[in-house]
Picture 1: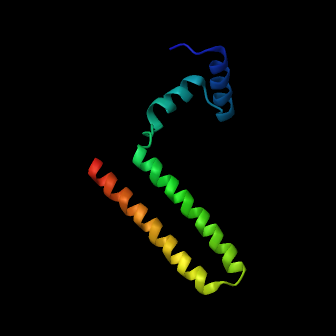
Picture 2: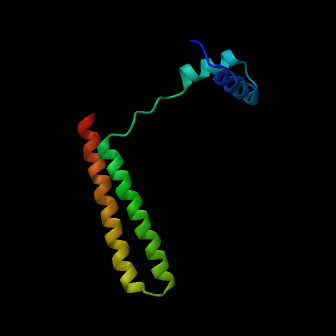
Picture 3: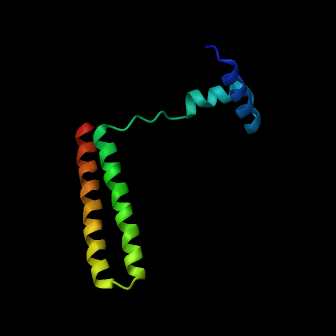
Amino acid sequence: MNFTDAEEREVKAKAAAAGISIAELLRISAFKLSIVERLTDFEREALRELMYQGKNLNDQVKACQANAWPSTKRKAEACLDGILAILRKLKIQNSTLL
């Protein structure tokens, strides 16, 4: 395999920063690193839903600061229910893929 000049400089810099040879860096990369699969469309959508729930939680903290405790409690419970539903969907989806 041939590296471009820029890639070779980057590999050399990483090896030097780690205090190992280029060969050792490549050996570690080949045998000890894990390649992570790309997320499925379903998983990406679930993550988007979770990020939206995070915005809801942030809004709830602001509501707590404004002393709207009963309303905030209901919103927090609804948000938690939403997160748990998303996690259940992910769990079901992942178990069917195995």
